[in-house]
Image (tube, rainbow, N blue to C red; front, side):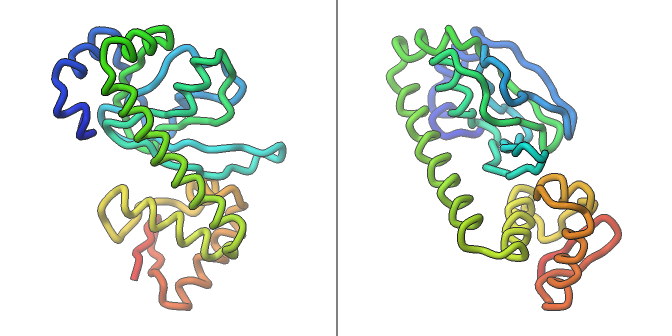
Length: 203
């Protein structure tokens, strides 16, 4: 895990491994569905997962990504209060996740006060990301929102070229392929990006 707190706390890392079970998910595989009771919390060890909300019409809104060394605070607090998931979690790429039973969270909090600090740091980060999403939805037009999504995906891969189909992008963006393709062509005409076969390159 490359989260700083965990890397500098070998004891906590070992304790987490002893309490959990590791599973590997393929790209696009669902990790958690909406309205499912939360019994475990995920800690990403390798890869990346995306957290989304889905409306009644099936349209999706990407909330944030969870990278190696991070966990999902929605799952943690939802599990603590015996609630169901309000989000859908999907593997953005092949991902290795350490799952820890929700009843072990209280043990970690009692044994390691640093674990509480870790949770609050995650909460703070997720809260800021959700505010960014709210700003984008409230104040930006569709083309700006789509460009922001592409930029985020490029940041994850540390590349200006994104290998993705229009269908895949439309699925994450929560709009039809026709709309996404039109917006991409518009942005290409504005010299914001270059379209290729199953790839998009930012200018």
